[in-house]
Image (tube, rainbow, N blue to C red; front, side, top):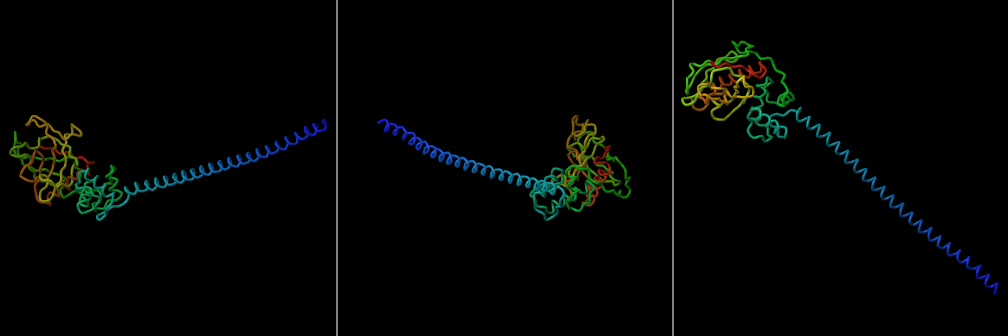
Length: 303
């Protein structure tokens, strides 16, 4: 009995050891399985992060490349050359700028046609550039606000060459409403003009600051014999304003211009140049020559 009891007690530790070993083996297996799963999850996460990093890197590369391309395009649009027959956004931007500067091209449609070429030539002539109708670096630069490199101007026959002021002499100034006629000398040439009408006042006497306005026009009243243009007259005592006090009317007059006397004889108070098409074009060229010579402004005394 004691012996049996002793064997029984001896067998229990063996069984316990076997059970413990089995449990340890199962635990080791589970641990190994858990560890394997954890490693797999880590590897997959690392792979995803790597893929995201590569995608981000590619996106940055594309963004940088696109940015550089856009920069080159923007520079190219200002330094490239456009001419008659071209159709693109650069032409559209050119047309919008010309219209805003008073050189009428009609609707800005991106098509460089004869009307746009004519406006370009007029603009180039007005700022002293070669009037070839081709828009290159210099023309783009002046349209963007840069000062043009001015060509030397050859004065017309009889011109003073350096005159900074001109005179418009009326053949009598009506004390009220009425048409006045007269002559104006610009760049050494003398031209006839009409001012006012039977129902409107003529230009008030005084000194005006003349600046560019629109070098080409086709609207009625500003066109004669197919030639249209206008120059703005300002009161030099009131910079930036085209208002000028007229004691005859007892009020300010505004929107005074120099332009061809189109339509019925007379104007609404402006100086309306008269003559054939060649005469009107010559006047426009002479006035532009004076503006170039005097830094964009010209002093005109009306008396």
